[in-house]
Length: 314
Ligand code: GLU
Image (cartoon, rainbow, N blue to C red; front, side, top):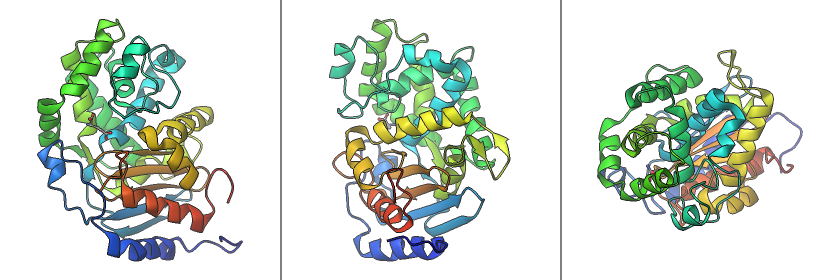
């Protein structure tokens, strides 16, 4: 039980890493593209960046990995900045209860995806980010935004991952074509998916990711850079979406076990905001049956219980 004394966050992250060490390699690494399939399944990284700017690391916290769907948080933030609340004409705000790449719901709901964090919803958001841009410019805008958030010019896209995603992304093409057929995408499918595959191919370390997400834990501003990213209200709303929709159809379970807004990706990363406290990123490539990092979720469950940071009360 967390007490009233100051938290020793370095000991907490070290202990979590140590306790999970015997289990590294558990879960199933995503294998739909070779670049993800060949990632060492025993990798484990964790980074905690507190709102007062302290950074705590464990394991492979400095090694970049494919952030995949975690990028959806950054493009949602960009789209909200460009279009404001108008984005909700294109995408809903409800948990989907279906697999991340489900097409059935999209047909039933006439091309309006349930939320911005399932694939269809993220593709609709990427379409909005493309407004007024060529695909190349939109990709540049996304990379610049993430570098600005993390205050780190070294963040790159893994172009090999982007190429593989495009070569195998049949279902994403199906989702995008479906939305286009309902008149819910403004740009050609190839352009939208070109940008989408590149955003998913961003490679970032846990430390970079935790820094990039810090504005969500700190009421919309990044205390490390003093950059004001979004309003307090917008940060709160993005957190609400992450809590309810950030883990595909495992979102309820993640809220139950961890109790923090988070977004996972099939590369095995999870970005979490503990409002008023810290931004946390974890990476362990083995996934559970919902496509969320198995040990990453467990590490965050341990962190939440040891810090008392759950938004539902310590
Ligand atoms: N690039 C992946 C896809 O669109 C992302 C999946 C994910 O991380 O959820 O299939």
